[in-house]
Image 1 (cartoon, rainbow, N blue to C red):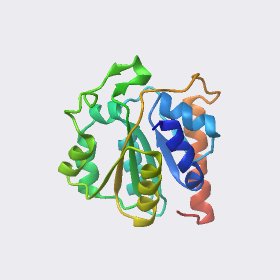
Image 2: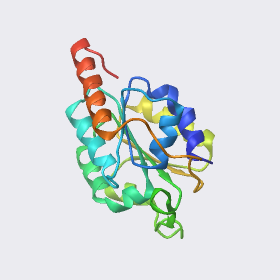
Image 3: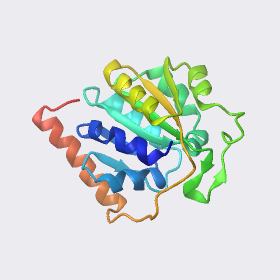
Length: 195
């Protein structure tokens, strides 16, 4: 399965959701589907998407938050899984696209490529109750919809191919993206909107 197919499948569900993506291929593939003001693409911050997502989920309990992460990023910040398990924000879905590669930083193999390091087992071991491992696009879609309906902290580890987009380049700079993302959150608060 490919990450781009998974993103395309869940894209309609992300319309009124705060979305934080890790840098590189994941961000580019989501951007290619069509930017929305509620999307925040991290740049130069490998390992921090889950931390930012958790902060948003805890401080905005009436909004759904989806973190689109990668195996390399999660491996750089494994402590985030224990922190997520401790605070258990019920409005957070943490998707980990595991391609066994640091694709966006040169394509080096990650620790999951050998099959020894198992991110879903680590998430369960950290104390997260709802963890799904998916290997097909259909399984991924079903796991994501189940997480949306559950309203409890959920982690989905999606085993994907180590392929990326055919190009990189967004016409949206980090500062502008952060400003527009914050403005979207503020407009939701003023209008009383929530997930």
